[in-house]
Length: 469
Image 1 (cartoon, helix red, strand yellow):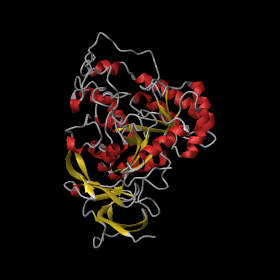
Image 2 (cartoon, rainbow, N blue to C red; image 1 turned 180 degrees about the vertical axis):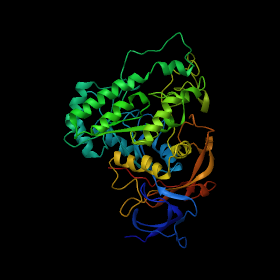
Image 3 (cartoon, helix red, strand yellow; image 1 turned 120 degrees about the vertical axis):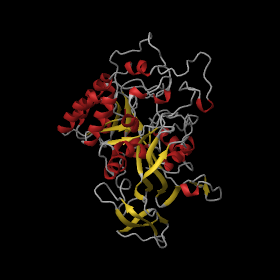
Image 4 (cartoon, one colour; image 1 turned 30 degrees about the vertical axis):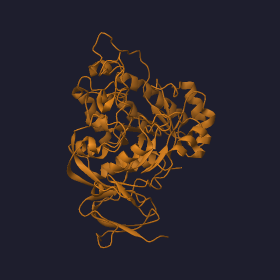
């Protein structure tokens, strides 16, 4: 065992059931070895003073797009962005990379491409597509955290949707390992774009993705969850439509193994505030009304919605039909066309202050924050034995931040590749100062001006993240 290093603060929150108070956490070989409930700054490797030290954030829904579409994102920029926001673990999605992560070979290609580029720990979900049911058990054995499928067009040809019969084949295989299945829960209900309406108006796009698309899909998810319970835990990704909440509540009351996530953007933005031509706000399912947003908050606070993630889904500005960041639009493109623009919101690493700022107004506590974006996302990703809480034997993953500090999300704070996000210039409460991954500081605002063998622009010069098997 290597020599212990001490991480201390006057304000430490170990888990969602604890109180904030002084503590010193001792770390050796990347693991927490002991915890003393006293502030001991002398000789500490990191003295956070009065800043809050809590578990590192686990973001269970990120699109890194590597290999194959690294002009959209990549593991270096994605993990830099994560580290700058106190996110110590990201779980990548199986699509938008090429090849999609739907075979063991594709899984290994992704893992190998990420080597030497991870500033935080990274794992991946596999994908369920037509015809790959026979690959699923082997992918779980290789290290996939579970699987995601689409019930509608995914937006990329290499990740087609599955129907009910194909779902049943896949879930029969997953039953052998209690494999988790995630659903992009939208299904076609006959809605279409009204071509008589202005495509640069957000309402034109919003009307083409009504809530009943989610309701229909979630009804199918619940049906399949019931059929395979308790052996195939089911999960609804990025819930947007509050209309689906009654069915979700009934399924949970029934005891079905169903969990639900929503995203920072559904909790912090409403449709009424989306400006014309501002395609950085487009995502699927869409951001809905203020009344809908309030119902999502109610469901989050009463436990119907289990967790919050970023669903960081970036692309290049030209695909957003947006002229920012040096992007060039095609000659026949309409700038700000919501209908034709790529759907996805860039937000990895900026969710902590967004959730805290909005949540405080609604009674959200720091303990709730840990529960929603650290603990439950770790359980969901199958890594709660090492992530999500500060406890002896677990990974020494910490974020040090000042919840009361004013924070303006300026472009210099956006570390993902394409700096197009609806949050630019947004003011919020809470600023991350240090991020620690398995006992190593990988981000430190006090090092922002340094460029030497150890630090570059606030990031450790060397990556310290690991692949999660």
